[in-house]
Amino acid sequence: MTGPVTTGLALALPRAGALTDAVMAPPTDVVPAEALADLRAQVAGDLAAVVEAMAEGERLRFDAFRFVLARRHPELAGGDGGPFVPSPARCRRAVGLSAVARCLRGRSPTPASAVAEVLAAGVEDAADVGDPAGRPPWWAAWYGGLPAGGRAMVEAEAVTWATQLWTALEWERLAQATVGGDDWWDCPRTRRLTLRGQADVRVRPGGRPVLLVVGGGVPPPDWRGSLGFPALVAALAGRERSVPARVVGLWPASGQVRILPVDSGVLTDTAAAVVDAVAVWVRRRGRPSR
Amino acid sequence: MPRTPTVADAFRPPEGADLLGRLRGPGTGRPAVDPGLAGGLRDWLEDGLAGAVGGDAAGTGPVRVTKETLTGVLMCEAHLVARRTAPRVVTVELARGTLVDALFRQWVTTGRLDDPWSDALGAVGVGDDGDGIAAFVASLPVERREALADEIADHAAGIVARWPVPSPTWLPRTQERVVVPLVGGRVVMSGVVDLAFGGPAGERASVCVVEIKSGRRRLEHRADLHFYALLETLRSGAPPFRIATYYTRTGELDVEPVTDDVLVGALQRVLAGAVRLCRLAAGTEPERTPNALCAWCTALPQCGPGRARAGTDVPRVAGDSDDDDDLALVSTALAGEGGDPVDEEPDR
Image 1 (cartoon, rainbow over the protein chains, first blue to last red):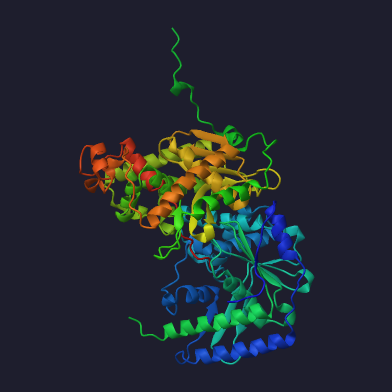
Image 2: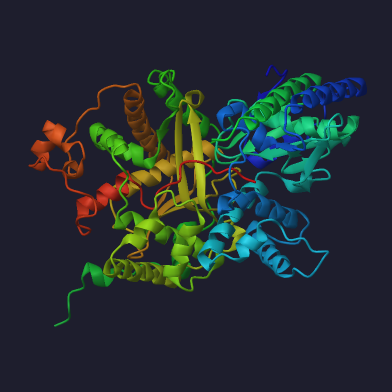
């Protein structure tokens, strides 16, 4: 990808202040409405052509995980990967986001207490199967069936994740912050493909969204694509004002931050990469299983 | 005639407020953070490693510097290489370390340890258990399994009796992974901190790092701790104000402040080890440095200096004699006590 301006961030101490400054900086680039409409039409056409090769009746939900997998490990793309097996590491983000949201709303004083409350509520929801209004989180039934030692590991993992996010920002300075949330875009030319973008924190400085995405380990070499994906889905799914001004990537384990200012070039490059990745996925899916 | 006090009589493991007080210090006068320190240390490392790293032409990925590889390569390069190619052996020490780590984590997080053996096995069973601890425990003869269960119960009792559950306001987090990429990611330092508490630093250092050990107290543990202090400094831009090793068997607690000397010493050790690791990654013949662990080295039959040191050409097998000090060192210094997970699992 040949995106325009991409920057790392030299974080002064306290880092939460510097990161919050970066998140809340006023928007700079504007993607014109015509450019966005053109992009939408182009992407819809390209993707529709690609998914033509899928088997009759097959649908594909394409998210950041599949995007990254198709780019980095095309040989692994296309498979169903076997049944999803939850683990403490695999559900720490889901539990951690709910916990940080509680802290943000002032319902819990600390990430640790918030995580405990989220887990307890999840178990309660999972047990209350007769309530048609209640929909337990995906991890709740699995978590509720674990022995005490296993539940403690889930809690511990989520506390560590949530604490890293909670201490990374000066939340009182964030404008209209929301925690988590997905963007969905059904490709209008086919309806057999849906893109799903995820962000961990969303704010709106100057009336434009800014996304914060938390990653594990260190920023990958293709971090521009990883940050561009949620920006593209948000842009496709909404109107002109829903195009993120920038996506900020935070990798707490390494203390690294990357900032991707979003303009027409970034969206175009990311769209091309997504079309390529979907094509890889569809091609691999069509191969006879051994 | 009054009995002469012995060291054993005099030693009282810290507990409760005393233990936390030693970790937290007085709470005032924590060291000011030099904002240029972390960048300076990073530059020093980058400069020192720039000439040592290759271009990864072999596609083997980055050179990984952990407390285990560091200790191993500085002890004997040939031994480290032999260990990498030999099948990983799970020992009672490794199993005990993993199980006690899990119990400590549970205690710090939930404040409950109802049935230590079940809790520990439940914790191991829910993760990926990359070391195969659950299978190892299940394969133990009944007597050894019961002995291990008794031992685990003793460790758990000590933790419960001496460790107050940290206040959530201290932001305690367990098994926190720290990764520091260097020279464009061609060298990666990493570790997993058993317990860290304190919010991110501003003008003053604010984080305390605690390493949990279920085995005997050893001098080498200080080097591990200094390595973690360096990792945390490079990751967060500020050093921890305190680093500590806690021994769950005896309740001993070694605490030290993090000074510039500590960080510079750790950095020099990392540089010395990382340069060797880079050389090995480039295919250089490993140097042989006879040491007390030669007797357990799988490369012993092909190693003249090692045979001379060990007095035999038949390697001993880890796990044959659990009470052997050197064996314990083999299993914990080189394999890691409790085994640090290396790779991130994807979040959902």
